[in-house]
Image (cartoon, rainbow, N blue to C red; front, side, top):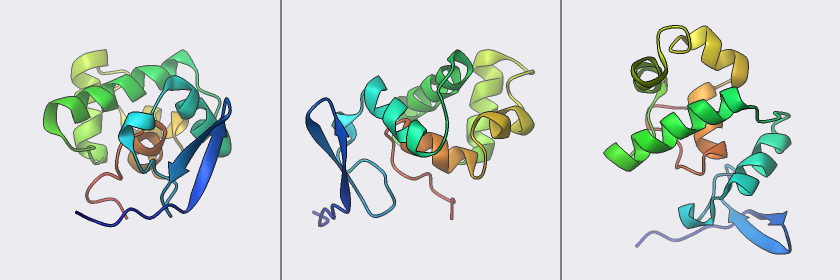
Length: 117
């Protein structure tokens, strides 16, 4: 079993949620919508219904394939579940700027996507 490295804690409602050195959850079971909102706030993002739609697509992808998708796979899943308009990179980048798949996976409580630097 790999060694768990705790870098810091996220404090939510008198709970300490451990984060790894890249600020991902150490334990995926610690994820709640409140945790997602706190992680997003640290990134300067206020989660809206549009964000939550994409987060749920991401979490459903993980539940099905047991991996966080890289950008292309995530976009394809969004397109299939939410339609052409939302299944575009530009739309996703407008909600999760920078490295969208990596940032959204962190907020969604998932491991860092493979093929993300």
